[in-house]
Length: 193
Length: 193
DNA sequence: GATCAAAACGGACTGCGGTCCGCTTCTATT
DNA sequence: AATAGAAGCGGACCGCAGTCCGTTTTGATC
Image 1: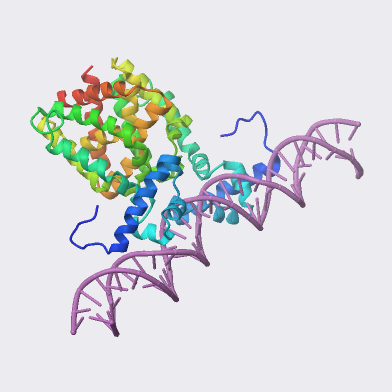
Image 2: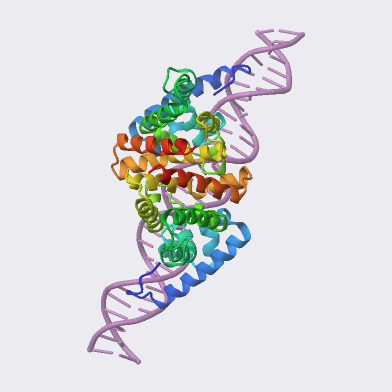
């Protein structure tokens, strides 16, 4: 999250750790939706202003909590072993990407939902941009030449946490069924090229 | 919105009209995001409790404001002339549906965004269910046999107001380009069958 | 027209995310 | 060790969505 170039003051760093620890505890106890910024400040033993100074907003806090998991996932699809990482044919990588993302959403999705900035720029956070670029690149490699940028946008929409969680939690769709549908969709998109 | 079977009391009906009129005025002046329930109550000359009694929530109010436009759109794709309405081949109807929905979002999307309940059940409001069923039906007719329900879910995701508005307003994507991408996507999905 | 229960009303109240600003604590410099 | 000013701190404060409950309006019944 933080570029190490301009180091944090000691008390600031201490409070960040205090807050992250307290946040994880609270989420454990009440779920991500049950966490309020006031309670968090109290639990961590700091003022509310400090929480907002550190994380900017509730969404920012959630993004900080996610950043480890996100970095790990990013590392895997960019540098990890095939079929998710480089080395496999693009269609297989697309399929693997969706499958892994579905798994990821099932594990961290509630946090991801809480991290969604409710403005238009929800799609412009670094992680979302990275995923989008990755999809676009794979589509190009797979020979999709007509507007790969928008096609990547559409595929991103399909993998949005909100929908995936809704399908699984409300409609009791099995994750494997989601994955199968994704395979089908992306195969058709690519084969149509 | 209201089934006519259990008629409203006179004062209730009067206040509903007052509120809807005031809401439209305020949105005209401040945009949908700028409308607050308190201001609305004040403008309409009623108490805040009344606003919530009538519409349940801010999202409910926005849905009431949308209901005319929604009913009109629904009428067109269910009973209107082809290619949107019945009579045209399913692929053409799918294409027309997306095109019309894009146009619709560009006109009413801000309202639609404001009407989005921020819970899981955002996809279970009657209008969303209807669109979903319509897409599913067209997919079946077009010969998509593998999990048309989930495929319809995916296609719905692509047409979500939030993304369309983001593409147009932030990334300056021309609506025609969105429509072209939709045609491409849905053609490939169907042809793959 | 008087009566009465149900429906509707209204505004004080709660809890939340987020801001503001006077005060405190660090750390670089001498 | 003294100092200065930048960085950090905290909690009172704001505006908002949504709730609660004592009071008022309505319209069916007599």
